[in-house]
Length: 421
Image (cartoon, rainbow, N blue to C red; front, side, top):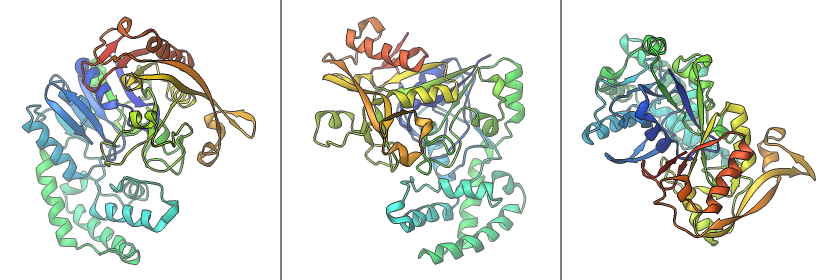
């Protein structure tokens, strides 16, 4: 039995979807355990190109069963759309995708409040996806949440009435339009009828699978440094993103997690507000144009920077990463020189990520090491030996700094564009 957690070692968008897709070939179960549809994983395989937000990215492996744990908050409309898309694409998820009844639902007022709160903060906005993620997690921990279990009785109607009385007052006070009970009730009852065949208590299924020696692949949403506690608070997400969240969000005891794969992009990106120490501000530079990306979930242009080894090293130590999956190495091709951040200084003193808060991280001086680049296109390489010498050195430099091996190297977006070492 193996239980492998796949995490992002930066601020998300590292390429976890691709990593989970090719690792799933040996998995009996693939599972999401945290976050919501604020996550966006792009998968390219023989079925086509997909942008997945809630269904585990490993669902394309036909021998796997997909699980969405109670730690995931769900926008029912998004989940229904993904299920229909996957079934129409020939993937077929009926009978092998299960959703925990403990999952909390993103309601219309959560999305409205998410936007209103951001607007009210003005210059102090945290840059949320406005998907309702923060407000639904706030309701979860303040006993105001609505779960799938509430639909089995009249509890849904009771809880919805109470919540609309509360939320409409806040929405109106902030200049929004109040919601109507009957329309929200009818909409979500309709969602429940469509998703009821997929809703199933996962505890016994997970526990029986562990006892039977089944292989689990756990898929993190977001990235390490968007974690509520260990990330760049308040510029973070609303849930725990490190592997320990699988215990609460899926019911897997920590002792069963055997491997932790840290997915690391060959450079650094971030969406939204918050510190990014290695950020490149020269928008007309060749480097900025090469690194430029658009986020799968929000469509926003990502901020970009050089690889930050202090961030990667901290993620490895924090989450007990056992091996790295390096993605997008091919994007660096064509650059004569590469800058790599090897540490920080603040007021002339060396500091680590954990020594400063988000505002201090925004003020650190980055210490760079210049390394040679390579001109060759590496998109067709399928073995480590086929990479240019300087590209091989770049990978080994990351291994040395992180203290764990790079087991996989991505040289393109497709599943097969992955070098296994």
